[in-house]
Image (cartoon, rainbow, N blue to C red; front, side, top):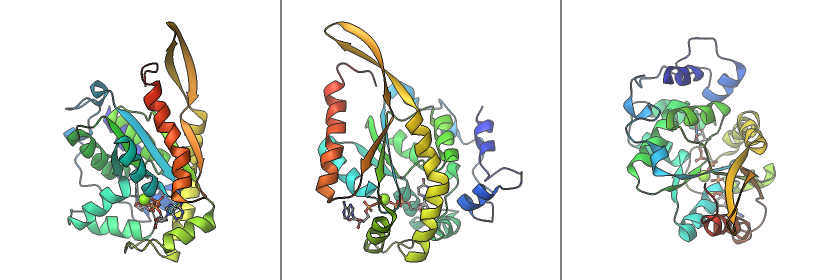
Length: 262
Ligand SMILES: Nc1ncnc2c1ncn2[C@@H]1O[C@H](COP(=O)(O)OP(=O)(O)O)[C@@H](O)[C@H]1O
Ligand SMILES: O=c1ccn([C@@H]2O[C@H](COP(=O)(O)OP(=O)(O)O)[C@@H](O)[C@H]2O)c(=O)[nH]1
Ligand SMILES: [Mg+2]
C-alpha cells in the first residue's frame, strides 16, 4: 500500500525527474537510505493516529509571512503542540544525521527536502507527543508532501491557515530575521519565493477547493454543514494585529467543540 506512496516521491523514483521535481529537490535526485520497510511510515502503523482523535492545523504561507511567530502565540493561548517542519529539518542537520549535508544544501538552495524525510520527522514527533492538537508549520510545501502525509499518517488537516503576505514584505522580514539561518539571504529568498509560487500555491489551491463536512447539532437538531478547510489571513500588520484575526478561529473551534465533530 505504501509502495504507492513512496513511488510518488522522486527520491526513489527511477523515472526521469520533471522540471517540478528539479525545482523541489535540486538536480541531483537523492537516493534514499530509508528502508521501504520502516515501520513508522506504515499507514495505520504502530500508533493509530485515527484512534487518538487528533486536531491538525497546517500553517502555510511564504517565507517570512509570520507562520512561526503566530504559531508561538497560538501555543501560548491555546496550548497546541507546535511542529515546525523547517525546525525539525534544522535539528536533524545539527544532529549530524546521515543525510545532513544534502539537507543543508537543499535548504541553502531554497528547495524542498524529500517528503519521506519530512513526513517521517513530523510523524515521529506526533507519535511521541501526548498532545491531541498539532500546529504543523511550513508543511506541506508541495502537493507531493501533502499526498505523502495523508498516505503515511492516514490523516488530513482539520484547518489550514494561510498567511497571505506581499513579496516585498516577506523579503524585508526574512532579511531582518537575524536568527543566523543559512537561507536568510537575498539569493535564497528569491529562490524560495519561486519555489513557493510553483510548488506551494497549488497546495493552497487544493485546500481552497476542499470543504469539510461537519456534523452540527443545535437545540437537538442535527444537521451537516460544509465548511472550507482553508482560512486565508492577510498577514500585513503588527504581530498582535495578525493574532487578533487568528484568535477567533481557535476560540471558535473550542466553543463549537460540543456541537461539532472535528
Ligand atoms: N506581523 C509582523 N510584522 C513585522 N514583522 C514580523 C511580523 N510577524 C513576524 N515578523 C518577523 O518577521 C520575521 C519572520 O517571521 P517568522 O514568524 O519567522 O516567519 P515564517 O515562519 O513565516 O518564515 C521574524 O523576524 C519575525 O519576528
Ligand atoms: O516541509 C518542509 C519544510 C521546510 N523545508 C525546507 O526548510 C526551509 C526552511 O523552512 P521553514 O519553514 O523553517 O522556513 P520559513 O518559511 O519559516 O522561513 C525551506 O525553504 C525548505 O528548504 C522543506 O524542505 N520541507
Ligand atoms: Mg518559520
